[in-house]
Amino acid sequence: MILISSYVFYGWWDYRFLALIFLSTLVDYFIGISIQKQSSSQKQKILLLTSVLFNLGVLGFFKYYNFFIESWIELFASFGYQIKSIWTLNIVLPVGISFYTFQTMSYTIDVYRKNLQPTKDFISFASFVSFFPQLVAGPIERATNLVPQILNKRKFNLEQSIDGTKLIIWGMFKKVVIADTLAPIVDDIFTNYATYDSSSLAIGAIYFAFQIYCDFSGYSDIAIGTSKLFGFELMSNFKFPYLSRNIGEFWRRWHISLSTWFRDYLYIPLGGSKHGKLLSIRNIFIIFLVSGFWHGANWTFIIWGLFHSILFLPSFIFKTNRKYTSSVVGEQNLLPSFRESSQVLTTFILVTIGWIFFRSDSISSSLGYLFKLLEFSNYSNSFVDFRFIYLIAAFALLEYKTRFDERRIHFFKVPIMNKFIWIGIACAVVLLFFKESPNNFIYFQF
Picture 1: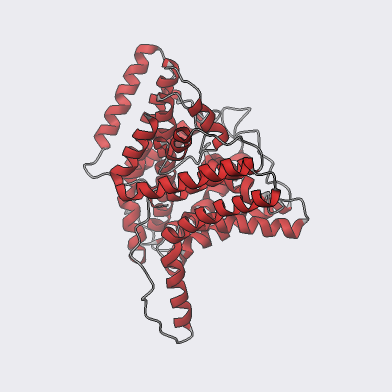
Picture 2: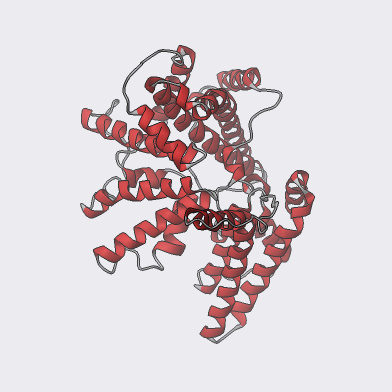
């Protein structure tokens, strides 16, 4: 049933790409089994390389083919050579391709490393690759976590289902009430940034910071919650990233499934931080640049990755990047200290500046936005709508209150009758803000 539901879910968007996800599943299923059968390490490496090249080839063609062709055309044009764009193709990007290709690659790599026994149950493996709650926008699950859950028999658990329902409602609240409410304002400001003053641009950047967080973490909450209804436990993808005290902590709390994927399957194989400062710095730049490029075929994402690598370097050089691995802001007190507040605010401002590159259509637009923002003139209150300010402030307070456990929805933790009242109110608010044509989740395009 899981496999059928997943294929129906994915095929509802575009049935033609079911063949692609099936092919990806087929390739890694047989390669995983073949790696285990081979006694020669050389042949095992060849099989692993085949899997990696196949998955990256499929991802590269659908996501980056036109980007590379257009970049070459622009490069030659800068030297005065005009090339007709006859090589570009009208390629439709399959939804979720960046997620499920990384998911299947990690399976093959884990089998090669002997961290996982390859499954011989094709239906279960196909269900792992196409598991519908997290198929199109993560979390990017590891086979070591999800495959055993698929293989084992599950029983209905009322408490797990209630927890899942809470997460679904909270995820919908973040998406519909916050992200979709801010989206039209953000779109207008970023599209017409040249006509707005500095204060409006600052508000636009802050609004986008909350929009993308509520949009993406909202989807993750819905995916995790839906999985709970079926008896599955997925990994957490966000742990209050805007309460981070430095960039290192931010990346341990933001898109955790992707950052840990790059750590385990790229950074550590490159040598991690074991071979001296210079090679470690090189590895850090590679990780962040690849992470940026993973997000989309645009130079703005690469610059965003480069920007974060530069932000990360000081904490790495001075060995503070691992400082906050097991603590949270305001851990011993009701309120954070002045120092913690300053650290959180500084980190948020730096991350928000990075979001300007992420959200802009081109490098020139992002630089134009930044230069206009830094003029510090012509302040107005054209976008200071206190309804949005109160909404964001209330959301931030709820985030702070639940900072010890990202899956504990605090305002639902009340006596049973009041709990259902709260759930009813939350559903009513979501329905009140719901639009006839809601915005797609931002990460669907990646």
